[in-house]
Image (cartoon, rainbow, N blue to C red):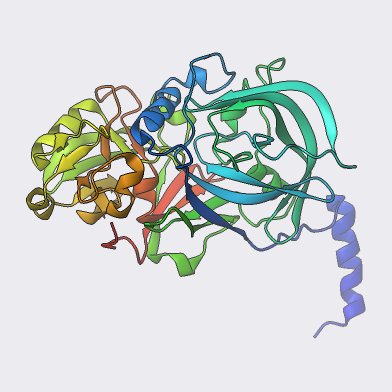
Length: 407
């Protein structure tokens, strides 16, 4: 064994060469995600809310500065994590959103200025189709998980916010950083570092990735999810995670967590390999209009007048086949139960108590538009998902809930 003192000159030499100490990165950081239903005003047309978001995602020009003054409806279903801002920190309940990248607060709980608050004076605004906010950019200390802090993190502080339910304070944006371009009104070509990027750059997490776990739930409020910064949680998935490269197709899919996939219903192809996105902020699963028509025909479903969702009888439900998503070299199958809305929540969407509604919906444009599907929450609650910025890829794995029959 070498004497300890013999290693000291080597260590000092290393410091003189690098100019800084060796960086030691911490373990991944995990946040609990809580699923909530906003039923404060009675039943809500969840499809209407969802489609407003879909339209905004598809028309990426609306995703930056907010220019649309159309009234919006309050969010019906959302998934939140607790994030601290300031020193001492105030806790805010923020929607976890892979389809946007700005982090902002102040929709319900107002921003508390502390000794770490720095007002940059820059106006900031983001539109989501189903909501928007505008206000001012601040730099402040953000606390994630068990006391992990990010100093001088850019956040938006809302002066105006619309489309967010009481108790929702803003959004934790975990999409690609380029989505922030144009959100600083006076600096239209400037991007804003995301919370994930800053955690990695400042050595707080070992990898520039995010992993998300949901599970099917059937109650109005349930802590059924987990968000992991910097790694994966092997206790939340089964088998191995398989990755696929981010799509290189035309916009708008390539601006988001966009991938290529094809879809079969049973053995019948309803959507050939094409580009779309993976999005936690969209409730349902959306496919191109021609694929939706094929799916409706194959399932013999009818459009329900009250909810706008596809409706099947008990006999038709029993005859459903798997809906298969071919992503990279793997196939991920939504079982018949995975294709339906939780029946215990039917009353909240204005549906019949014993009705069976499908979660597949029309994206509103034919295939070949560069935005041909959205794998939303109802897909993600059946599969573990990983969003890897460093390697430009998305990964999926099965979970113990992939084949659940709880719906």
